Length: 244
Image (tube, rainbow, N blue to C red; front, side, top):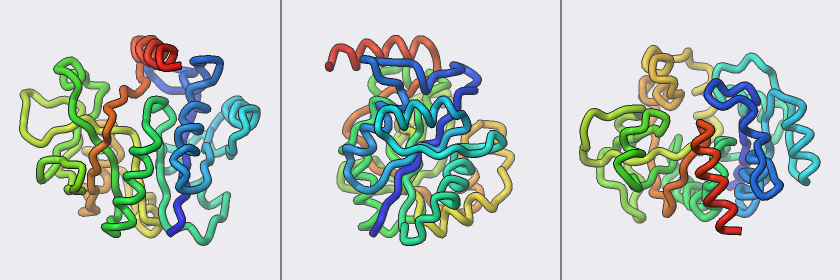
């Protein structure tokens, strides 16, 4: 099966404008994400950007990027436009990797792709155990509740996604910013109107659950923090500079 990785990116994020081009170790955040995706070695990688500055940055760092409309409601709508423009007709799976996850491990991206191929799932994503109580209580950190306890060996269904959970419950995990779609499911998904729950929670994956499209969840070995705030940037920068 053939997989294509598309990374949606824009400069106008509400909480931290300009974050894709913030630099760590001399390389932009978005280019770090591209390198991790390329290292998974599962297919071509493109950035779908609404800003020419992002496209230029990716090209300057040896990556592939495509300019998309500024009018998309979600990252998934953006990757679908890129997919149509790229006209890759022989693609079976599309991975939507969030552009603000520079700590996402290549092995975890590959594992999700492998699980999708084995299970023939419609949509798959990744989650990990919470590293601490602060992350659990942070509303910028998305949670996923699964039907069964999440193990390395299984690929359970997601029951719900949320930004806050009032108290510790079983089978709630730290959701990571990545989705893998089978191509027909992606086409269906973008044709469906945004659901009220999706709009209220600002979580596009709820559109799938609200329309009875199953999402399966694979366990990630790492529990990376996404980049939403300046505090996140400082923390991620410290981790990445230490590792280098």
